[in-house]
Length: 545
Ligand code: DHE
Image (cartoon, rainbow, N blue to C red):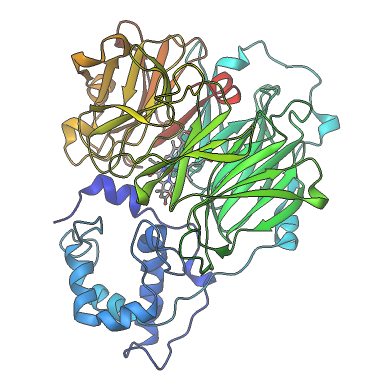
């Protein structure tokens, strides 16, 4: 039993690390394998397996595959697992036709040899990849165009290695910008001027929205593989610093906010929170900028630690380390922007950090594999302010109380669980000016569910949800057409969805009128290739969701 193409597209995304960079040897303890089989298995491992099992196979979303374990399991067991997958989430690489029988046989033996390791990436490598394309003194001193910058959207064009900057007032594509490979997120500097993108290949690009058209002004590669970037937002530090977190090597780097010059690199290798044993590959997941202190809040996935990295004096760096739970992934602020809520996905918990007092305030259990994105903040008619997450593993949509002052009995507890269309949900979204809660389900194996969204009326949550056939509205040809990631416009009157198809197929962005829940506009065309994440300038700067 496999999980369908949608989940494989998510979990089995190729690592940006080229397998040739990873050095490993056939060792005498492992079963017989030819050099050719070893090299091909190494390539397949980086392409399909490293994302879940980790480059060093210490495990995360996928089980650990270190040689003490794989040698005990043996070749026949490993072959069966790779062929048929498992109910725990391992894809069925054999019966799906992705891997041949020979590839599976070689992979089962490869896994019983020590894992090949990719190279490190320190200051020297960062400095040689760093380019200031337009120095600060040559940049405009005021916007060179009269577009409404606060309503521009930065849209990931995943498989094209680009972002599209789209005018949210006119739906015009302002510019398409070459970036790193498969940009994961865009974040915007506190002034709203600069967009920072992070490629899967750990390339950060910095775009100046004041230029006409907006263009890149600096770039740097902070590692071999990464997912997160953020910029300083604390009062007095606006636009001063940027930070990027890497999957490989496991580290974060603090950079100059004007030029991306690397200033301080910090490794995240260390002990796990629970068993307190050394982990060689604790990947950096979500990063947000604190509004309470001059700090970045950094999620370290495999060790289960949240770091509050104080950037006041980076030569004497002070970091508050909060032990939470494994494996930290994505998250966002509550409506007051004091509490950071983040998913520990494999523990089925939401970790809640008080950024003002710098401590853990709660770790409520939620349903299977929470995946909030940045989450959604609502005013629940019965329970007051709540933060919402959906889930990958089942159809639950969980509401957590976030108002310790006005509603102390509900704070940091699950107050309500709604049933959505099904599992495979990645993102929820709302807006202070909206009474709707939008829930996607792009990874659900049922096409009807992955190509539509559910919308709940916050004032009448008992009434269930309405389903909107977003992909159908886009009027596209063949393709998976997964509907992913709701994002509001500046005014909170429209919600934008990506219809994410294959690289050679037609995709689109569908704009829905939030109040009437009807189609307002479709943005498509040859240059809208595999859109996924969308980041509205105002909402991203101000953490409105
Ligand atoms: Fe994401 C956020 C990691 C697959 C689209 N994703 C994040 C964050 C992390 C992460 C750590 C939080 C960043 C932050 O806030 O600083 N994502 C990973 C993975 O490790 C994973 C599971 C597998 C992989 O190999 O990348 C993965 N993610 C995907 C996809 O397949 C998605 C759907 C399409 C794509 O573009 O690759 C995808 N991830 C997104 C989006 C966000 C995100 C759109 C930001 C959501 C937001 O609203 O903030």
